[in-house]
Amino acid sequence: MEKQEKKRALAIAAVPVQPWGELYGRETAFRQGTVFKDLDLPFFASDSLEEPVRRPSSEDGQAELMQELCEVSFLLDDLTLYLDTHPEDKQAWDIYQENNQKRKELKETFAKRFYPLTRDCMAFCGDYGWENGVPPWEGGCC
Amino acid sequence: MWTYEKRLQFPVKITQTCPKTAKLIISQYGGPDGELSASLRYLSQRYSMPVKAVGGLLTDIGTEELAHMEMICAMVYQLTKNLTPEQVKEEGFDAYYIDHTTGLWPQAASSLPFCATEFQSKGDAIADLTEDLAAEQKARVVYENLLRVIRDPEVREPLKFLRAREIVHFQRFGEALERTKDKLDEKNYYFFNPEFDKAVNGYGR
Image (cartoon, rainbow over all chains, first blue to last red; front, side):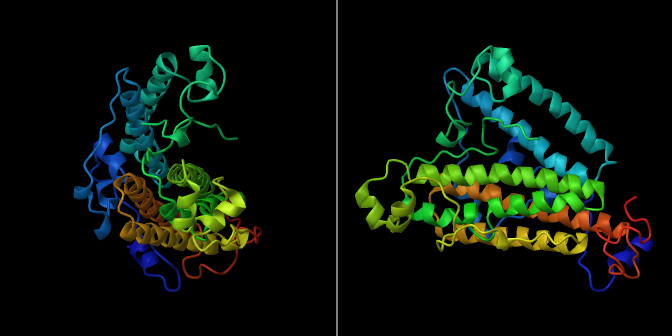
């Protein structure tokens, strides 16, 4: 009741706090730009039917591994912001921790098999520098 | 401290050169509602935020905006790669080309250079968070304006992703404003500025 009163205060903006709801799977979340179904509010001119879903593929598996890393990382990006405003949400925190572990493993695997993505990963593949791999702005991701 | 990760947040792989489209999209690099402006806005405002978690949210969103700036730059770069002098003239990219060749430089679609006057850091939590809510809405409109006129699916996919992020960020800033209000006097949110009048009510201590 007290909260209701606050919401109706004059002369200040109010946005309802998001309740926990249905989550998209990792792949859909990445494509839609959010893991939260309730926040997926598309624009009429961005009809997703016109654009077929392109799954990256490569002979050595690099594109697939990068795609998986991007999807897991994005899930964490979105959950990070949710947890910033819902720090007490146990469900979100559990999913965060689980995927954070997965991201760590994927980054290590990518560094060992292909090239390091961060300074920290360089130690894994024993290869320092920018020479390996395509720069991200050249389309060297996913 | 920041650490760079050698990948984009969302893939950008554009195969068709199109300087005309690059000239429109560059607005989200250096334009008034662009990603550079967004990032600097949030990363500037966070220092004096009275609620710790709100300063944290501004850091996290400001960081994500840097990744969005990188995506926009990658799009402009790929759209102007392998440009011929003929294409430069035909597609209205000549003025930019004279000043920057095909280098990346933060400007609006209207050619206005990036300028810090495009955003505020007001030192007042309610004023700043209300600006942030509006900033996300304005950026959403730019992405929608782009989506109405751009047809190339390779360009549309990252634009749709970025538009979706504006809506999520709006929601989070709204929640940040609620958290800030929780610590203020609900009978008069404007009785004092929690970022400056620290002695009043021991706010944020």
